Image (tube, rainbow, N blue to C red; front, top):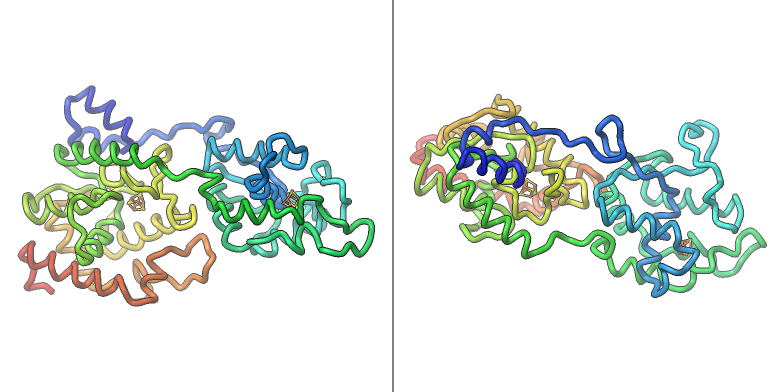
Length: 373
Ligand code: SF4
Ligand code: SF4
């Protein structure tokens, strides 16, 4: 549920209970796309670098070197998760995505092609790849701290290899130090606090609380870690407080998105799309996979509504640990990968396993499920 849906519903039916919790989410068609899918921004790989370079220059807005970069910055600031397609001039078997040379910089075709290839090679992406802008720039900021050897080579070996005049200025390196947050500002702290207050109010009055499926397991880890109500970044501790101390029969509905009622204050949530954008901008992929992993283990589908005690009884029977391969939390992905996430990193340090198991034991005791431990 999006906040605006809740407010609309609250206005119409006075409270946000079962009616609005079960209403199907409307898919809003994206501007600029007849199919309803957001239209992709097509850029040359080197222009990603110029975008970062412009962040480190004092006069970027007035410099012809950064004309395209400023347009990219503007588009991304408006829509941080806009799809970006990396197109360059390759020919041969990659001709399906060829960019032509109209956006080549003046240094010549060979230099332009080599510079595009350098970027794609470092990011390990093929020409024609499309990623959400946030994920793409997060990836870039992990792998490309300097344009030395990419945009300029120190000593020119020939007329065609003088490089970009900006290459030795340090602009790119300055921009890189500013980080992705200079391009895509994080969510506003005050707004997140307001979202926390409003969504909690909604949760406390809801007959059925919609919860993204896999985070019923995250809530156990949080409980094991000792997080209790007042946690800024989501409403899971407050939900567990209701379940464990007030109403174990609270109905929970397993949903497939980062529903506003629990996720509203999360810094890793895109409020417009109601999805996860943590873990380098790719969190929605990881979250969807975890949702499905958990549903498969529980034998349930999205939309299942259960009393919380019954749901956790099933979870604790079927998910005894976050370790085990394949399992919900541990992953074998190398980094960087759009499938990687922080929990994998923590798990390889062996930590959340203990947190989950501790939380599971404590919650079972509270819910009178200790006989099944
Ligand atoms: S040095 Fe030139 S080509 Fe390289 S990122 Fe900066 S402006 Fe772009
Ligand atoms: S990361 Fe996603 S699922 Fe988890 S609390 Fe934030 S928005 Fe919700």
